[in-house]
Image (cartoon, rainbow, N blue to C red; front, side, top):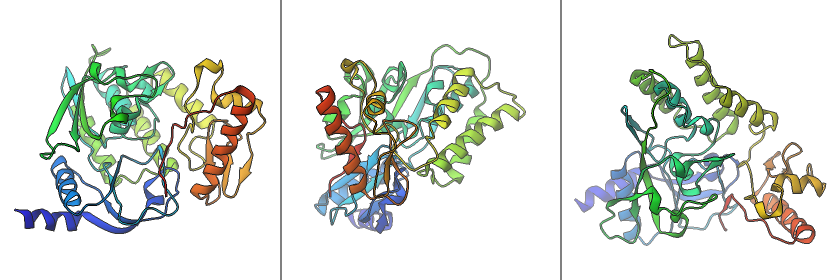
Length: 347
């Protein structure tokens, strides 16, 4: 049995993979080791064997909120869960695995007649990462939508899948208990609110999931991400179901494309807002006259002050230079240091 696990680990564990291809930032050097488990069982095998080897591990989803280093630490195993993308749906609940794109919730909501997930449309990132960060758009956040989260505790020798109720997850503004525990989210159950219509198209959900898997999960590029989900939305509108696109989703599309969210490689908003400051970070950067400031291949977005873009083959060092520039300027003028929302991996 152990030999079987080693054999599976060696099959799943790739060598010398460019992390730049696994991140919406398009930044990152070669990972010595990289794995893409498609099931919980494969993930457990990878965790078991890598632990026996004494390997350091980094677990992430679609790489839409992470800045990988230019020179990753040697011997580190990077594990992406984006191939763990499945959904089970019935009239009262959904169960989604952690690698499913967050934006998929909005389209599944249209197919099931629920309006509760429209805010996730065009929200980059995986479902598990959305829970981890308690991703939000305006007043709606992922933590308010989940019921029970399934996770693996890395301190548990058995690596058994456990459950925790949402009310015990310490959800707050872009905060959750998972940011403070050695836990890996593998999925979650959503209790679906009363549906707004009579639509319930399981076949449409299956088709949507098949289309996503046929794309081979290659949606790290924000342009590819936008092309996929906007095309799928149009297909629902003009297909035999003739599903009307809700106004909130049209507004999201207009806002994000208007701010050029998908034109350049980035991780979206770089800093968490400090609401005690009275204005968003983007507004403060605008007042400081820093929009459009460039360094190397990086640039502070001319369209949205809280985005630092990879405009021309930027390095992690370029992005961090601009991050420090913004932090220091805000600290000097407004008296606080903004907290990064993007997860910054050290060399």
